[in-house]
Length: 273
Ligand SMILES: [Zn+2]
Image (tube, rainbow, N blue to C red):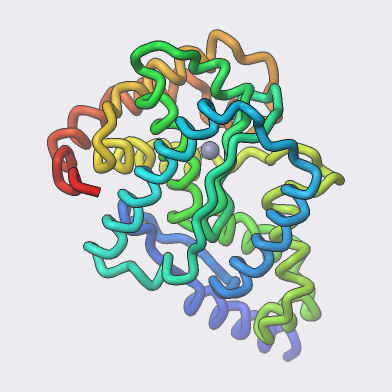
Protein backbone atom coordinates (compact mmCIF):
# COMPACT_ATOMS: atom_id res chain seq x y z
CA UNK A 1 0.00 0.00 0.00
CA UNK A 2 2.72 2.39 0.99
CA UNK A 3 4.55 1.53 -2.20
CA UNK A 4 1.46 2.32 -4.31
CA UNK A 5 1.07 5.74 -2.75
CA UNK A 6 4.76 6.32 -3.33
CA UNK A 7 4.48 5.32 -6.97
CA UNK A 8 1.43 7.45 -7.69
CA UNK A 9 2.97 10.41 -5.91
CA UNK A 10 6.10 9.98 -8.01
CA UNK A 11 3.98 9.73 -11.16
CA UNK A 12 2.19 12.98 -10.30
CA UNK A 13 5.50 14.73 -9.72
CA UNK A 14 6.96 13.39 -12.96
CA UNK A 15 3.90 14.44 -15.01
CA UNK A 16 3.68 17.93 -13.60
CA UNK A 17 7.43 18.42 -13.83
CA UNK A 18 7.72 17.77 -17.56
CA UNK A 19 8.70 20.75 -19.65
CA UNK A 20 9.95 21.31 -23.18
CA UNK A 21 13.18 22.90 -24.35
CA UNK A 22 12.04 25.77 -26.58
CA UNK A 23 14.62 25.69 -29.35
CA UNK A 24 14.77 21.93 -29.77
CA UNK A 25 11.37 20.65 -28.61
CA UNK A 26 12.99 18.04 -26.37
CA UNK A 27 10.94 17.01 -23.34
CA UNK A 28 12.76 17.18 -20.02
CA UNK A 29 12.09 16.53 -16.37
CA UNK A 30 12.43 19.57 -14.16
CA UNK A 31 11.21 18.83 -10.66
CA UNK A 32 12.44 21.99 -9.03
CA UNK A 33 10.71 25.36 -9.31
CA UNK A 34 12.62 28.04 -11.21
CA UNK A 35 12.49 30.29 -8.14
CA UNK A 36 14.28 27.60 -6.14
CA UNK A 37 16.85 27.04 -8.88
CA UNK A 38 17.58 30.75 -9.20
CA UNK A 39 17.95 31.22 -5.46
CA UNK A 40 20.20 28.16 -5.08
CA UNK A 41 22.27 29.16 -8.12
CA UNK A 42 22.69 32.68 -6.76
CA UNK A 43 24.08 31.24 -3.51
CA UNK A 44 26.50 29.01 -5.44
CA UNK A 45 27.56 31.87 -7.68
CA UNK A 46 28.21 34.29 -4.82
CA UNK A 47 30.24 31.69 -3.02
CA UNK A 48 32.27 31.02 -6.19
CA UNK A 49 32.86 34.72 -6.88
CA UNK A 50 34.23 35.28 -3.36
CA UNK A 51 37.23 33.12 -4.22
CA UNK A 52 37.41 33.94 -7.93
CA UNK A 53 40.03 36.41 -9.15
CA UNK A 54 38.65 38.80 -11.74
CA UNK A 55 40.94 39.59 -14.65
CA UNK A 56 42.68 42.95 -14.37
CA UNK A 57 43.02 43.14 -18.16
CA UNK A 58 40.42 45.83 -18.89
CA UNK A 59 40.58 45.37 -22.65
CA UNK A 60 40.07 41.59 -22.54
CA UNK A 61 37.28 41.99 -19.98
CA UNK A 62 35.54 44.48 -22.26
CA UNK A 63 35.75 42.03 -25.18
CA UNK A 64 34.11 39.28 -23.10
CA UNK A 65 31.42 41.58 -21.70
CA UNK A 66 30.54 42.88 -25.16
CA UNK A 67 30.12 39.44 -26.73
CA UNK A 68 28.29 38.07 -23.69
CA UNK A 69 25.88 41.02 -23.66
CA UNK A 70 25.03 40.45 -27.31
CA UNK A 71 24.47 36.72 -26.76
CA UNK A 72 22.30 37.45 -23.70
CA UNK A 73 20.26 39.99 -25.69
CA UNK A 74 19.79 37.46 -28.47
CA UNK A 75 18.60 34.88 -25.93
CA UNK A 76 16.16 37.32 -24.35
CA UNK A 77 14.86 38.49 -27.73
CA UNK A 78 14.35 34.93 -28.86
CA UNK A 79 12.58 33.86 -25.66
CA UNK A 80 10.33 36.94 -25.72
CA UNK A 81 9.47 36.44 -29.37
CA UNK A 82 8.57 32.82 -28.74
CA UNK A 83 6.41 33.52 -25.68
CA UNK A 84 8.88 32.11 -23.17
CA UNK A 85 9.77 35.37 -21.46
CA UNK A 86 8.62 33.96 -18.10
CA UNK A 87 11.73 31.75 -18.20
CA UNK A 88 14.03 34.75 -17.98
CA UNK A 89 11.84 37.19 -16.06
CA UNK A 90 14.08 36.96 -13.01
CA UNK A 91 17.40 36.84 -14.78
CA UNK A 92 19.98 39.43 -13.69
CA UNK A 93 22.79 39.07 -16.21
CA UNK A 94 26.41 39.48 -15.16
CA UNK A 95 29.45 38.93 -17.35
CA UNK A 96 32.93 38.32 -15.94
CA UNK A 97 36.38 37.32 -17.07
CA UNK A 98 38.05 35.28 -14.32
CA UNK A 99 41.77 34.49 -14.00
CA UNK A 100 41.93 30.73 -14.40
CA UNK A 101 44.15 28.73 -16.74
CA UNK A 102 41.47 26.13 -17.34
CA UNK A 103 39.92 26.38 -20.80
CA UNK A 104 36.41 26.79 -19.58
CA UNK A 105 33.37 29.00 -19.13
CA UNK A 106 29.93 28.72 -17.54
CA UNK A 107 26.56 30.39 -17.27
CA UNK A 108 24.56 29.82 -14.10
CA UNK A 109 20.77 29.87 -14.21
CA UNK A 110 19.89 33.51 -13.65
CA UNK A 111 22.39 34.73 -16.25
CA UNK A 112 25.75 34.76 -14.47
CA UNK A 113 28.27 34.26 -17.25
CA UNK A 114 31.91 33.59 -16.46
CA UNK A 115 34.67 33.05 -19.01
CA UNK A 116 38.09 31.87 -17.82
CA UNK A 117 41.23 33.56 -19.12
CA UNK A 118 42.45 30.09 -20.18
CA UNK A 119 39.58 29.93 -22.69
CA UNK A 120 40.28 33.41 -24.01
CA UNK A 121 43.98 32.56 -24.39
CA UNK A 122 43.09 29.42 -26.36
CA UNK A 123 40.91 31.50 -28.70
CA UNK A 124 43.68 34.05 -29.14
CA UNK A 125 43.45 37.42 -30.82
CA UNK A 126 42.81 36.43 -34.42
CA UNK A 127 40.04 37.77 -36.67
CA UNK A 128 37.59 35.08 -35.53
CA UNK A 129 38.06 35.91 -31.85
CA UNK A 130 34.61 37.36 -31.16
CA UNK A 131 32.87 34.68 -33.23
CA UNK A 132 34.62 31.89 -31.29
CA UNK A 133 33.89 33.62 -28.01
CA UNK A 134 30.25 33.85 -29.10
CA UNK A 135 30.29 30.09 -29.69
CA UNK A 136 31.59 29.50 -26.14
CA UNK A 137 29.16 31.88 -24.47
CA UNK A 138 26.25 30.82 -26.69
CA UNK A 139 26.88 27.23 -25.65
CA UNK A 140 26.93 28.11 -21.94
CA UNK A 141 23.88 30.38 -22.14
CA UNK A 142 22.26 27.51 -24.06
CA UNK A 143 22.71 25.24 -21.01
CA UNK A 144 21.09 27.92 -18.83
CA UNK A 145 18.05 28.74 -20.95
CA UNK A 146 17.44 25.06 -21.70
CA UNK A 147 17.40 24.57 -17.92
CA UNK A 148 19.99 21.83 -17.97
CA UNK A 149 20.93 22.59 -14.36
CA UNK A 150 17.37 21.99 -13.20
CA UNK A 151 17.27 18.79 -15.22
CA UNK A 152 20.54 17.53 -13.76
CA UNK A 153 19.58 18.53 -10.21
CA UNK A 154 16.24 16.78 -10.73
CA UNK A 155 18.03 13.64 -11.88
CA UNK A 156 20.26 13.95 -8.83
CA UNK A 157 17.20 14.19 -6.61
CA UNK A 158 15.55 11.24 -8.33
CA UNK A 159 18.68 9.15 -7.91
CA UNK A 160 18.82 9.86 -4.18
CA UNK A 161 15.15 10.23 -3.65
CA UNK A 162 13.79 9.07 -0.35
CA UNK A 163 10.40 10.20 0.85
CA UNK A 164 12.02 12.94 2.93
CA UNK A 165 13.79 14.44 -0.07
CA UNK A 166 10.71 14.12 -2.25
CA UNK A 167 8.62 15.75 0.47
CA UNK A 168 11.10 18.60 0.72
CA UNK A 169 10.97 19.20 -3.02
CA UNK A 170 7.19 19.10 -3.06
CA UNK A 171 7.09 21.54 -0.17
CA UNK A 172 9.63 23.75 -1.96
CA UNK A 173 12.11 23.44 0.87
CA UNK A 174 15.36 24.87 -0.28
CA UNK A 175 17.80 22.66 1.63
CA UNK A 176 17.34 19.61 -0.58
CA UNK A 177 17.30 21.79 -3.67
CA UNK A 178 20.41 23.66 -2.60
CA UNK A 179 22.21 20.39 -2.11
CA UNK A 180 21.12 19.05 -5.49
CA UNK A 181 22.06 22.29 -7.24
CA UNK A 182 25.43 22.35 -5.49
CA UNK A 183 26.10 18.82 -6.71
CA UNK A 184 24.72 19.55 -10.17
CA UNK A 185 26.90 22.65 -10.59
CA UNK A 186 29.85 21.49 -8.59
CA UNK A 187 31.03 25.04 -8.11
CA UNK A 188 31.80 24.64 -4.43
CA UNK A 189 35.28 24.11 -3.07
CA UNK A 190 34.38 20.47 -2.56
CA UNK A 191 34.27 19.86 -6.29
CA UNK A 192 36.49 22.57 -7.67
CA UNK A 193 35.43 22.23 -11.28
CA UNK A 194 32.21 22.11 -13.20
CA UNK A 195 30.95 18.62 -13.84
CA UNK A 196 30.18 17.67 -17.41
CA UNK A 197 26.60 17.77 -18.57
CA UNK A 198 25.13 14.73 -20.32
CA UNK A 199 25.88 13.99 -23.95
CA UNK A 200 22.34 14.97 -24.94
CA UNK A 201 22.57 18.25 -23.05
CA UNK A 202 25.97 19.06 -24.55
CA UNK A 203 24.74 18.57 -28.11
CA UNK A 204 21.63 20.60 -27.31
CA UNK A 205 23.75 23.43 -25.86
CA UNK A 206 25.93 23.31 -29.00
CA UNK A 207 22.83 23.73 -31.15
CA UNK A 208 21.32 26.54 -29.07
CA UNK A 209 24.77 28.15 -29.00
CA UNK A 210 24.98 28.43 -32.78
CA UNK A 211 21.41 29.76 -32.93
CA UNK A 212 22.21 32.47 -30.36
CA UNK A 213 25.50 33.34 -32.06
CA UNK A 214 23.68 33.70 -35.39
CA UNK A 215 20.91 35.80 -33.86
CA UNK A 216 23.51 38.03 -32.24
CA UNK A 217 25.17 38.63 -35.62
CA UNK A 218 28.21 36.37 -35.22
CA UNK A 219 29.49 33.74 -37.62
CA UNK A 220 28.27 30.42 -36.22
CA UNK A 221 30.90 28.56 -38.24
CA UNK A 222 33.38 29.63 -35.57
CA UNK A 223 31.96 26.88 -33.33
CA UNK A 224 33.82 24.43 -35.55
CA UNK A 225 37.19 26.19 -35.37
CA UNK A 226 36.70 26.60 -31.62
CA UNK A 227 36.17 22.88 -31.14
CA UNK A 228 39.14 22.09 -33.36
CA UNK A 229 41.29 24.28 -31.08
CA UNK A 230 39.80 22.60 -28.00
CA UNK A 231 40.52 19.17 -29.41
CA UNK A 232 44.10 20.08 -30.27
CA UNK A 233 44.71 21.48 -26.78
CA UNK A 234 42.65 19.05 -24.73
CA UNK A 235 44.44 17.28 -21.93
CA UNK A 236 41.71 16.93 -19.34
CA UNK A 237 38.39 15.13 -19.37
CA UNK A 238 36.97 16.65 -16.23
CA UNK A 239 36.13 20.21 -17.19
CA UNK A 240 32.68 21.05 -18.45
CA UNK A 241 33.83 22.43 -21.75
CA UNK A 242 36.24 19.58 -22.34
CA UNK A 243 33.71 16.90 -21.65
CA UNK A 244 34.45 13.78 -23.67
CA UNK A 245 30.73 13.05 -23.85
CA UNK A 246 30.27 13.62 -26.70
CA UNK A 247 33.71 13.58 -28.30
CA UNK A 248 34.96 16.64 -30.17
CA UNK A 249 34.64 14.70 -33.42
CA UNK A 250 30.95 14.00 -32.80
CA UNK A 251 30.29 17.61 -31.88
CA UNK A 252 32.14 18.99 -34.88
CA UNK A 253 30.34 16.76 -37.36
CA UNK A 254 26.95 17.59 -35.79
CA UNK A 255 27.77 21.31 -35.86
CA UNK A 256 28.84 21.08 -39.50
CA UNK A 257 25.41 19.60 -40.30
CA UNK A 258 23.49 22.15 -38.24
CA UNK A 259 25.31 25.41 -39.03
CA UNK A 260 24.06 25.92 -42.64
CA UNK A 261 20.45 25.22 -41.55
CA UNK A 262 20.70 27.51 -38.53
CA UNK A 263 22.20 30.31 -40.63
CA UNK A 264 19.44 29.94 -43.22
CA UNK A 265 16.73 30.02 -40.54
CA UNK A 266 17.97 32.63 -38.08
CA UNK A 267 20.44 34.93 -39.79
CA UNK A 268 19.27 38.54 -39.58
CA UNK A 269 16.14 37.62 -37.63
CA UNK A 270 17.16 39.59 -34.57
CA UNK A 271 19.97 41.56 -36.10
CA UNK A 272 19.32 44.82 -34.24
CA UNK A 273 20.05 44.32 -30.59
ZN1 LIG B 1 28.49 22.34 -22.10
